[in-house]
Amino acid sequence: MNSQDKSSQTSSASDAYRFDSEGALLETQLPLPRRQGKVRDVYDLGDDLLIVSTDRISAFDYILPSGIPGKGALLTAMSRFWFDRMDDGAIGGGKIGHHLISTDVPEAVAKLVDPEPLRGRVMVARKAEVVPFECVVRGYLEGSGWRAYQDCGEICGVKLPAGLRQCDQLASPIFTPSTKAEAGHDENVSFEVMAEGAGIETSSSLRELSLMIYQDAARIAAERGILIADTKFEFGWFGEDDAAKKLIIIDEVLTPDSSRFWSADEYEPGRSQRSFDKQFVREWLLASDWDRNSEPPKLPAEIIEKTAARYREGFDRLVG
Image (tube, rainbow, N blue to C red; front, top):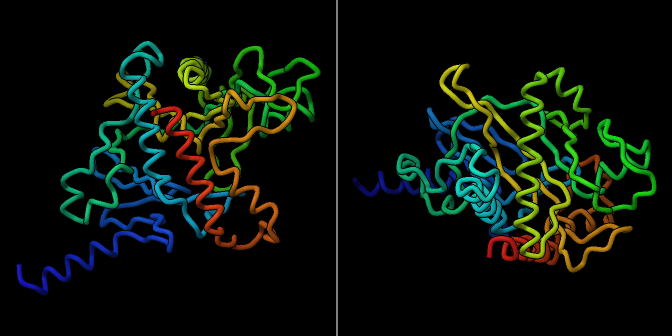
């Protein structure tokens, strides 16, 4: 290879990644078919998918111009931890299938771009036909569930006892599905609405699987001093033909971006709890003069550092 060819190859590799001034990976542009979510860049590898967890962070339905350095790698490692618990039977007793194949950068991708920025933040995953509902499980009363309870005493058609306080633990976890919105907020719906859209048999299976995963994961987390207040799962159909298809869990699983994690030793119902997630970001934005109808501002270095530390603390306590 002559010097001009080497220069061209290096240039194309550098064009594959966009970082912010703090070193957070904001975007990948690999020479493969791509679709983007709020946090992940998803590439079509033919038979499989390559899911890249960037360091992007969103709030109030906006992707912020600042990232949280290392966040994508932590989310990937935490998902891998939970998928491994499904594999070893600690979650679901060996009954839970999932989409993860590997967290290594595929050789074919490493030949196209510099693989180093991808290491630790990719999942090679099986393709699946996505079920168009989020499977939300709540063990505690917070967020949109708390607001719904205050309005009508129930969540997604599930009636709850009177007199519950914010962040109270529920007598047993409840399944509260939502629609998967392409843009904006997901919409909470009743199980009956879900059954109309996905079918009663599929919906019943999803409810059973979701509650099983949550209860086993909550037990594992509690042993490490963490309460999983609520979480959401995504599922898809995987298999060569209709007769062989089965439901598997897809996307990230039980991370601070898909779940609400609290410290057990700080838990006090009747008020909001400190979470192992982007709470610092939300609070700073709410206190700023941003109107939440225009492009969001850059985050101060202090907020970025505090948020990164909070993600890291949650990861270290859960995964070790």
